[in-house]
Length: 391
Image (cartoon, rainbow, N blue to C red; front, side, top):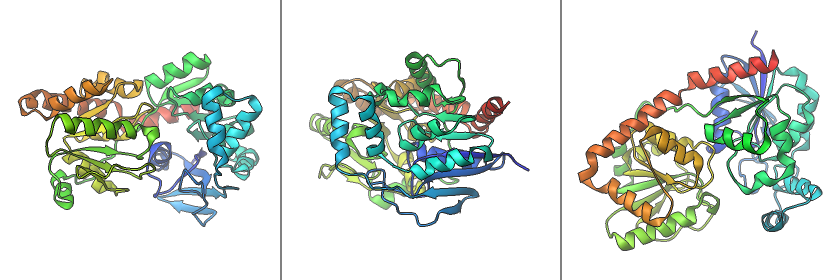
């Protein structure tokens, strides 16, 4: 009989296709042969409203038991005010508790379930540090807790309310060396057992960039994959692209794959496809001249690893230490620190005279993913941490 473990995450489902939530599902599906797994989560799909959308309290998704709890209220307009107050002057301890309640998803019954049922599980693993289920769940669980924080250098780490998340668990899974260095420096928590996690890269059986180009009538394009949001620095991406096209007129297009939560410029050289299925995503990345990720705050970036795995050039924001680390460690991708570096690197990528060097960089990038981001090794490291925590 397999041991039973619990994953805790704020959203979970086939419709939830990004960030820590997707990574939680991938871990669960890749480890279900090792352990019996329960996922404890909410009934929400949308991370802005946190509205209950799933109907069932318990369901099976790809062989994993999912236990859902109602979000007791949708996010109201008051969150914007308290969040702005934090950004400007910080918050008192009492106001930090108000912030985590209003940020949502507010699910006290989920926390009560963890407190009452913690002895049912060999270990409880919390995915991402930022939300109510992790912050309050860590306080409720007295033992056998592991956190995958997915932290990066952002203002929210200044909040004292997150101290327990990094100081109380029995184990921590860091996505990258850069994340571990950041958290160890801030919390001096080197005594807590830890390992490196990350994500394995799962590729479809068939990937065809030409199929994508034919479907959408495209030829020469760069692609962005992810939430289209100012928090992902997409506003700067649009400004950089407009300036690039002004200075380097061409038929180049910017293709966006992901849900827009900010206005997308109405330009003939920008194509916003919204949410796409995995086949279109991989085909689109494979057919692109480059994947462009302008975000300043990433704890891993699965889409960068996927692009490297299919031998597509990658260009990222060098202000993000994790993304810059992928570039330096692989010797296979570009990072920039301002518009002029971006312009020069994109021109280099698009210049046929540099094809031999670019092909070598693509090969370096693929090797980096093959050697560091395979599921067998990643799940074995997590299994080792679980057994060590429970020893």
